[in-house]
Image (cartoon, rainbow, N blue to C red; front, side, top):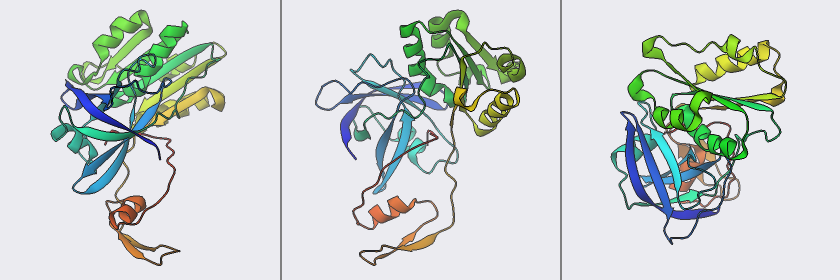
Length: 272
């Protein structure tokens, strides 16, 4: 897989659990262009083992001087989010993939309803830049648990104006999905990203209200579960490899020193 050599140009603590990272290319050149909703995969060498974590690109797609991601520190992390929060510093170098978009905007949509929960706001940051640039009709509905955990809420309020609606759980605010999704004009597309329970609730509501599947778009943040250890045998080399519970098969193969070629696709991202 082709990669880009980058270094950390800046780090900002956005909320008690979220850090924002700015990447620049090591050779000083511009990054490839991307579209709203795109992500990159960052390779992290943690204790001699390579972790590959996907993160949404958050900056404006028209600004290719830097790439921006945000990472939420996870209590049940496999190591990636803790490493990013506790060990990564300005000037450190990494390899990232070229941008891929599996959560793109429907360009012919007459209206766009964006629904975010917590760290699920990240893919919408670049989408909003695209929507603003094209003059599209949209609304952003952002739910988070308390004021100090509303990452980028103040910035979004300025950028989006009356198109921005926030719901703060600690203040008793609730997003009425029936009211929101039950009275939208034909041609509206809906996008949701956030915790699993929220995504499920939004999708079920939309489907029960008769929304066509082609107008429902979701990206769910899921931490990959730790499974049971198992053993594999490589067909050509006949090498046997033990895969620990906390490792993927690919990581175990690479840890064993065996080269492999693979492709990566993604329905979900989780800032691990």
